[in-house]
Image (cartoon, rainbow, N blue to C red):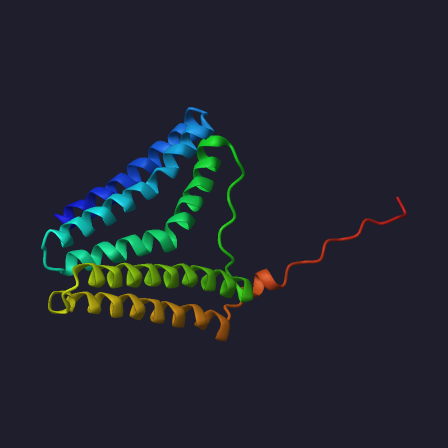
Length: 193
C-alpha cells in the first residue's frame, strides 16, 4: 500500500506542478497557479499520515516505510529548488520572461552552487532520519523496527558521497576553457572622428 501511495504522490506532484505552471502562465492567473503549487507539500503530509497509520495498525516496518521517509526527505531538501527551476523555465517558455541563468559552470561559483545542492541533500537526510526515528518511537518495538536503521545509514551514505562530490569542486575547481578565459578586450572608440 505504501509503495502505491508513494507512486500516487509522485504522480500527484508532477500533475500539480504542471497544473500550477499552466494556470500561472497560460491562463495568466498567477495567484491561482501559486495556490496550486503550494498544495504540493500536502501530498507529503498525506504520505506521512498514511505511513504512521499503517505502522500504528500493526504493519511491520519495512523497506516501504524507509522509502517513504527518504521520499519525504528528498522533497523537503530538493523540492523547492526543483519547483523554482521549473517555474523559471515555464516563465521563459510560456510567459515571455528572459531565459533563466543556469548554474555557474566554473571556479568557486560552481563550488558554491554544488555546496548549496549538497545542503539540500543533507537536509533531506536529516528529515528522513528524523521521520525514521519517530517511526521507531511510534511503533515502540525494537524487534520490529531494526530494518529502518539501514535506511538511516543509507540516507547518510548518500549525503556523505554527495558531500565528497561537492567538495571535489572546491579542491579541484573546474576551469573555463581557454577561449572563454581569453576574451578580447573591447576596442575603445577613437576621439579623432
